[in-house]
Each structure stands twice: as C-alpha cells, then as structure tokens.
Image (cartoon, rainbow, N blue to C red; front, side, top):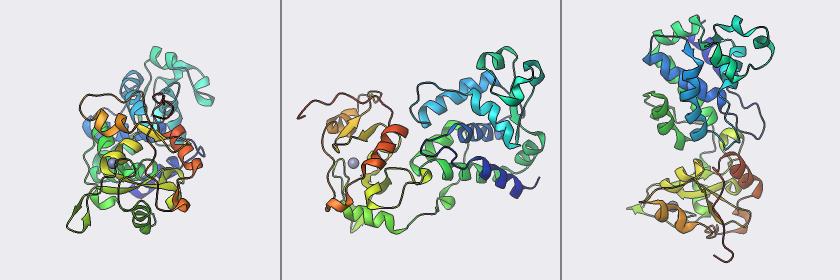
Length: 300
Ligand SMILES: [Zn+2]
C-alpha cells in the first residue's frame, strides 16, 4: 500500500453515510488510533481501553444520543480494510456478519488496531498521520473543533496550511454584512483600526453535513459564541430565542457568555431574507446541541 492509497481508503471511509445524521464514530476512532500509533509501539489496542478512552470523545465531540456505542466503530472499521481484530475466533462466527455485544468483546479481551501494513506505513511517515488526521477533521468537524479534538487524541499538528476548504469565500463577508458586522448573540463588534477582530461567520448546519453557504444558514458570531454554538452549549429555537444547555456549567463566564442570553431573541439580520431557516436550526438542535435545554420562562 502506498501513502496515496491509504489516503484514498480513509477518504472512502469517512464519507458522510447517514444523510442528515452525524455519524462521528469511525472518524473519532480513526483520530484516536492515529494518536495512539505515534505514541505507542503496540499496534493492537484492547477493546476495554478503546471503550474507556473513545467514550468521552464520542460524548464530547459527537451528537447527543441516548446511548454511546464504542463497540460499533471498533468492529465495523474492519470492513474498510485498514483495521483488524484479534482473538476474534473466540467470538464465534457472529463476528463476521453482525456486531458482537460489548460484553463479549470485553469477556474475550478482543484487541483492535490498524492492519500491520497500515501501521508500518503510518509509523514510517509521521507526516502522513498528520495529513490523514486533517483530512478526517476537514470532512467531519468545523474548525472550532480542531484544536480541542487534536489535543484530546494527543496529536500535534501544524494545521494552519490545511485550513483551506471547499467553500464559498464570499460566505463570511455576506454573513457578517447580514448581521451588520456584530455578533448575533452578544453584539460584539470590536475592530482594530478598520479590521474586524474575532468576529466569524458560523454555519448553522455544518458545511461537513451539507449545509449551504447561504445567509439563511449563517450567523455572525464572536469567536466565543461561535465555539459555544458549534460545541452545542446553546442553540436557537423556532421562535429564534437562544436556549442554553442544562449541561453547561461553571462559575466565571457561564452567566456572561451563556445564561444571560437564555430566552433572549437572536439579534435579527438587517433583512428578513437573511433570517435563519428553521430546517438548518432544526439540524443544529438535533445533531449539535447538547440538550436538554434549560426551561424557557414565558416573556422572559
Ligand atoms: Zn458573541
């Protein structure tokens, strides 16, 4: 296998396969395993360890779901040709055609890891590990996730050069103009001379999930509110009011950045034509917001 072939294989794995639903399981397992392979010499990782370490990544960086299944990507990545399991024979034939229960994986101490060929290729090319990690990030997560996610999986990457993405370069300008160059939550609009600083155009429905580069899918947000919005600390309801997650907590900053805006209306754009479409907001509420939301008091 050549580095290019491996890249191609990763690209095929990480395509969006589930329509509107975010499916970050395999991408997160891959990032986790890429972090491991630079760090450790052991290729095969016990499932118990993967479960312990991948679970918090799924909870923090994945969508809100009733249950968290680390056993699915651990087994299903095998079908993509770069991952394998050992001790699998202990599990009987079921392993080849359907998912084995988590308890079975634990009981038989199943290990999983990159195939020998893939692992050797990665170990010999640290730059390739970085390229693959960036490719996965680009395909599945907005840029507000990059630093935290790389940190969480222990990958150190110079990623400035690869922040280029397929997107409409005018999107930022159009969205900022729609909101008159201020944060749609807090109104922040600081400039250095004539240059806007730390004001960004956020996608409501992520570019990675097929969200369009249109004003109706954009919000002008300060860097802090952009990150809090992308990470699901707050969302926007059908009435265009902010709704803060019950999971958001802390002492300093919680009120200033979040709860003081709870229930308040979005600072509306300068034209009705630019108002966020509910279908995009709905995607955010389902796939990004870490609910449940705090109660909204009438006329608050
Ligand atoms: Zn703001």
